[in-house]
Image (tube, rainbow, N blue to C red; front, side):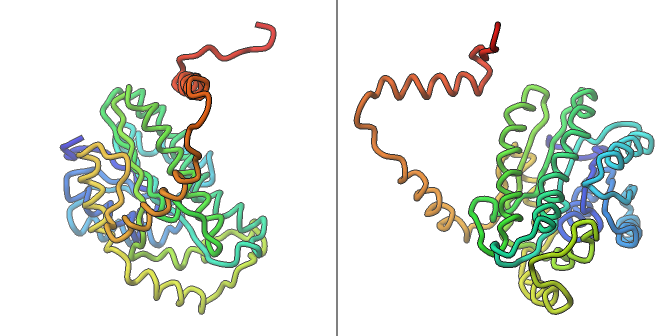
Length: 301
């Protein structure tokens, strides 16, 4: 996708931070923008900002963990703009920091439910509609640099983002034949209000094992204030879409860290010493199955 004029963009977490940055940058490029966010007051404020720039936009209050609400939002987009989105931005995310050994079930359910489950809901809701439209489309999912490594202080968040990266790799393989591109964005730090994410945590998730409250939020704000400007990140995303890039990681300062991390993984694989033909057969069989080239054994068949 090279021209964004007239494209319909659906952006979760679109009322602030990275999502609002995407709404501004892609709206200025001619997209019709739908911002979805759990906070109605933030949606209203963002719509006023976007319309002040002359951007055609629509807002929907949406909890991305609510599948029925997601389906209703998709129907609303088609009613308002007459078509399914051609650009899907899975941007909404939440985080909280604390010792992994103190993580509660509620912490896991909330952090993984939003950061992974919300992405799953977006894909299952919109991908069939994108395919049915027959139009070239693109999916952008915001993961995190933290998805490449584990974290003793952000364990559930990093695990969810790792799954998101893996999931987008799979969708990229599966959707290419439909002319639907897929990109996964892995930021190191963004200037956003994710520090206030705990304020949107539902009581249904129970107690957290982490420290919460104004002091914790202020501490996180002190970190995120140094992040990349959302509109700068959105410009990198736009270029990534044009380049058909699967990975968008506009943080060159992280390159050595990632290289060292993956080098440790590769170095853990022993050198091939015996039975090279057998090893090749094992690998070939596995790859053939993964690519759908081998018959799956069915008991009784």
